[in-house]
Length: 272
Picture 1 (cartoon, one colour):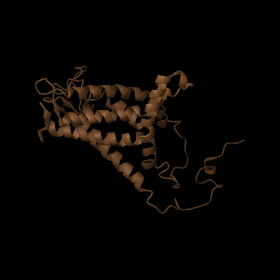
Picture 2: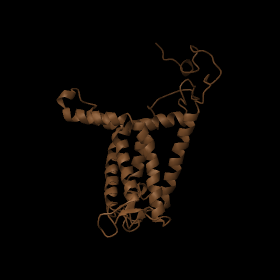
Picture 3: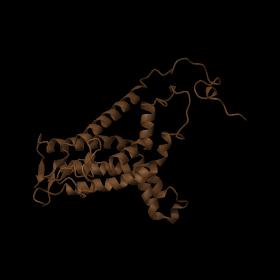
Picture 4: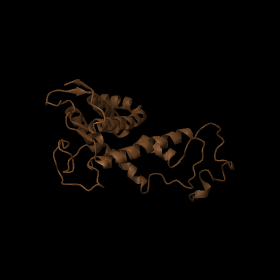
């Protein structure tokens, strides 16, 4: 049996009703893709600018380091910002100071199952909404470059876990006051909340769910992993919410640290 030609499948298939209109829907189906595109665009533009400006990313007095610059391990980092030490020399301006984390975090988000759905529909319009024809003549799925890279999501997950550990260390350092003693400020709470939500997004990932219990054939023989799988599965139902919330908390955390580091505002100190 011969394989059907492209013109014989999908919307232009002769087996389907010949409807000239792209859709018969009368509701505002375009609103969700539009808002998704705007939300993603705002984050990408903000994060790109902040990742390259190299200003106001470290508050030495309270040990606040923005997540867009963590880990900062080059000689280009301002004194004190290199929590993990200086590993490389000066970096040119076109390389972000967080070059060890940003590429992997970007890959983790780009290949995320939720984000795929989000930008496939809103940016690539494949399809933009239910009962709305997409403009593409053919569909090859994630079997060719560049979309075949989406299959590496499970590996980017492990990098995301390591980076989340580094962010956790940054948050712990933020509890150190100006004299080396325990300190607590509004910035500390913002950084901590951001890290907690980043962990929630990371461990609610579908790959994490597979790691904890996806390959088990008998849950009864692995009660601990079954319990972990149950917890991750509950978080997984909120993966979309965590995906959007963490975009907001990343911007909020960076913006607050930028204001404090630039001297625009003073950190609200609760202890020390």
